[in-house]
Length: 216
Image 1: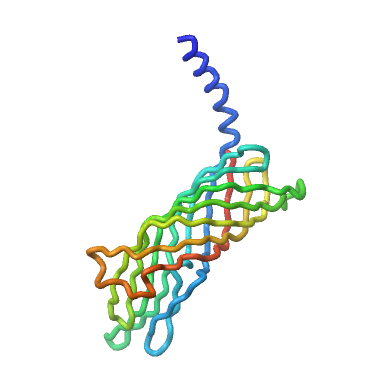
Image 2: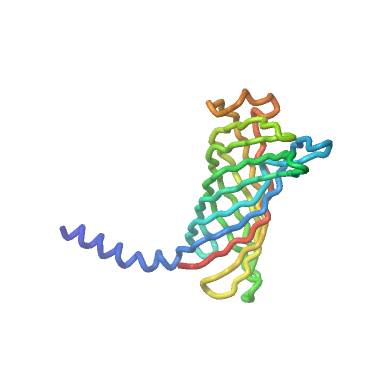
């Protein structure tokens, strides 16, 4: 009983210190894919990339030691390319969409350069686990079908600037390179097997990002 009470006391004393090291992370990304494909639209081309699109993330960071943070976030990124027109009751649509949810975890190291607003440079690296993604294509109003892809494990590296406004709030603009490949998974919703060039989907890309960090 005495040992249990001692452990509870130590945990109670440690919790405030741990909370001081916790940080809330919110992030918005604009992605540019490493590989692009095209669809026909009335003789023109609609270009899309599974590695591009808009993304949002939220999660937590924890300062392990001074200026070295561990982080974990959940996010969703979607790429949508669309051309559409309706003339005299006749419509023509060409589109491509690919969405994926993901989990990231890694380490960020701050290299402090000053005590001002431009506080330093952050370098980081980590892993990303991507949930099944779905690719859906329509070409000149012809529904080409929907293809599902398996979970995928990838990695990322990033570089950001630290803009420190207060002791508890900062903004980190920067970029992130992520390496991700999805494998096609036949499902009942697939209209037909994926073409050979779509069996392995390249969702690698670069994100321009803005991260908000608030110490809890």
